[in-house]
Image (cartoon, rainbow, N blue to C red):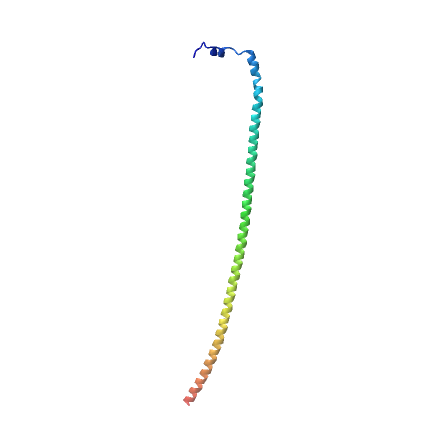
Amino acid sequence: MDLTSSSYMASLSPTPSSLIHSSASLPAAFSSPQNSTTLFGISSFLKLVSSRYEVYKLQKKVSRLRFETMNDRMEQLRNNELKLRTTLFEDHFQQDASELVQIRDLQNSTIVFDREAMNHFAVDFAAAQREAYEVSR
């Protein structure tokens, strides 16, 4: 680099006063875009926060609805289980009742059969007794 060059010399020279006054107006010129950028950033951040809050509320609502749906489903399952148990109990009770009726009918027929058999036996025994008595005489 050439130390005698005009660009190097110009960079070493003090800043003219006209340039200082014009650079003083630069922050005012840049403040407007800087403020709009800041406002845009803040508004974007607020929109992001509000949208995240909406998502959070929707997640809570979905989880609450899922829980309510699960409770409803559990209630349906309990009702179905109760109906099944009632039906099974009724079926079992009816089966027991029909078995009791069959047992009673069987006992009645056995008793009738036993009475007839006893009557036959008694008649045959009496006849055999008479024959034995007549033969022994």
